Length: 128
Image 1: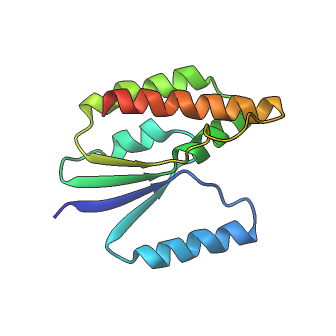
Image 2: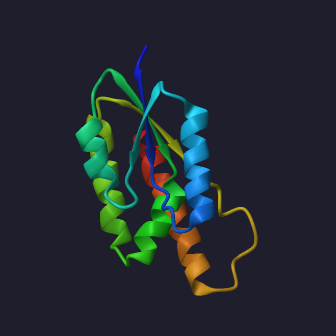
Image 3: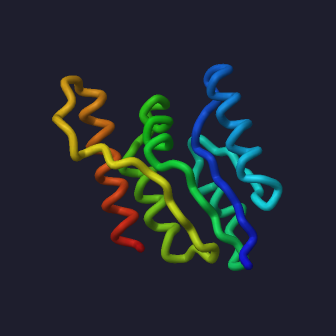
């Protein structure tokens, strides 16, 4: 089979999140190689990209959150990822969250997040 790699985008901001991450690593077991990268998703994907691998990226919406918190250029970051995908050697599986089916959020940051996540989902789906 394929070598299993897990690419986590979450950040351990507090003890609860540290415990959650630790438990998830334990649950995955030793057959998974874990990588953690909250911002430079394509840099990490490029470093681990091999045809004999499957990479589970968990998750896109946490990545969007991290980019927003760092005030990164969202369109540029998404374009770099979209441009990487057609040439990827590994099999890539993306985890994300649907955020656009509820009510319109009452604050700008939440609306921006929803819009960014939707654009990212569309961009990746177009390359699938």
